[in-house]
Image (cartoon, rainbow, N blue to C red; front, side, top):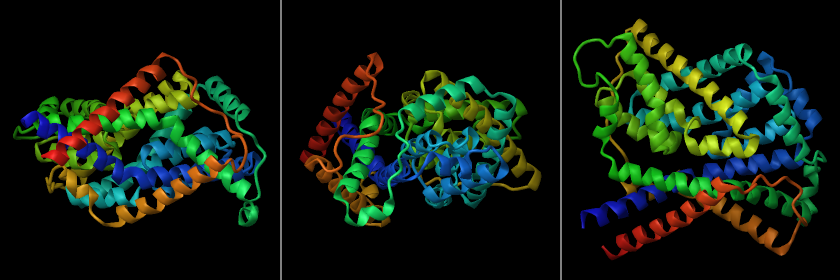
Length: 401
């Protein structure tokens, strides 16, 4: 019976995580579809093509405004890069849209403290700067050029006039087709990732994660090597939890309450872009070689940034205190709040786009389909099917309980 109850909790947790993130998925995919249809390559190159402070700042600012979850930010970043944005401004957008996020700061304030809110935003800017510095030192230009050429080959650079949306059902159909294509590219990864996140959150006790970090619970200052080890283990813990930047914050609160260092906590929070489902989506967009480079780039940048934030706190004499409220109860994620109403809006948007595409508005899709198949795609497909069966079983158990 305990297993069945935990199964039901795991499923509710998975559904809750997805419910919290759905509107952000929708927002990111709408932005991506708009960029694909209405932004010309020349205009994008003029705005963000050069890797200057202005372009990187623009990428960071637009990322801040987008407030996306990881998957939707990935799609928007690919659209920016395909349209001619520089590599560094594109990566700055990706980092900003997942770290310089208003709602993320609110959740951090609830589960950690205001110190970590400051660390998140200041650290996010440092993270972008460190990433840029690493690219200047280690830049595989041939690989970047090859990926850009591949993306441009699959991108039809015939931007539409947004003014025609007022009286063109066909153009709305094209927009809907581009929007739904984004969902088609990641549904397997999203299903498997969120299902695993719910299973880990429900079945793996928090004590396991604190056991991963040496020196937790011990009195006295930690050595530099212990702090460094925390920054390395933080991404490892995030890799196996994959709840996303929003969902990982409650777990981060538990880790900090159990003695994990500031560096370990910040590395854990910053690691939402180096987990396997995200790397996998990068590979679908750019190929495994580029995906590996981006993951290594972000991993190096987040480790350095976490150390800077940790010792910056120590230098300023700050002593963060955690709220330690723990993970939300599964049912708390379905309360009628701003998330509920935003989800209602994007459920409506998705339904309208689906209806337009079903009616055939906009004709055949003009955009490259990144679903190339292969062994990994087949494995993920069947894992996703198993995931749906797992979710259905948990729902039935919860209803009958």
